[in-house]
Length: 152
Length: 152
Image (cartoon, rainbow over all chains, first blue to last red; front, side, top):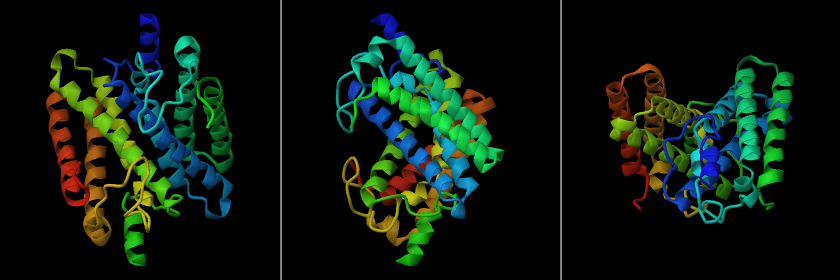
């Protein structure tokens, strides 16, 4: 179990000094982080779906926000005992996330990589280039959700 | 009222194409954004309070996250009708936020400015320099909360 914890903590690529606070707080903050990411992915999708009102500044702001959250050290919010519990609502993380730390780590690193790549491309890319990278990022979200998150 | 809405939407310094979704969704996302900011300010404070385990990489990640959230366009999450309502929980925004849009805008811009300055200083600054700027940023939080947020 101890080994699993350290793997999870290291997920984000930022060395976490310690797990972040009580279990309920960890769950509440990680739910907040992913809700905020979801808002930003929704805004990018909306921009890409409406070329008549395309605003690259909006996409840049949203992509930078996603990348900064991805790079912030979310791994420390998946500490021991946080496989169950209630933050804003009961956690939807599946036991497999904690049981398969190598897969969980790979999923997190893939998300981080593609989020940073989207932020890079958003700054100067064409709508087509941004759309391609946004699809790549979205695949990492979907893949992780299908493995490690309970369905709504 | 219409003028107020446009002032609020412009708060973040990023021109918002439109208000973001239903009222409950706006409230839920802004609560998520500020909860996530709070986690990151807490992590910076913890680093500054514990020089024996000081980790500047953690501070950089947290400061970048705060700045990116500040720059993301939060103003679009304070649309008309969102002075009341429930996201994760009932909103704590006070009516004054919507009644005094110039003051609200000034508070938001002050937060954004100091958040960006903290991210800049975190990258290369000394702990003392970071501490000073973190205090300046914290004052903008406290000032806005005392004017525009119901107490816990």
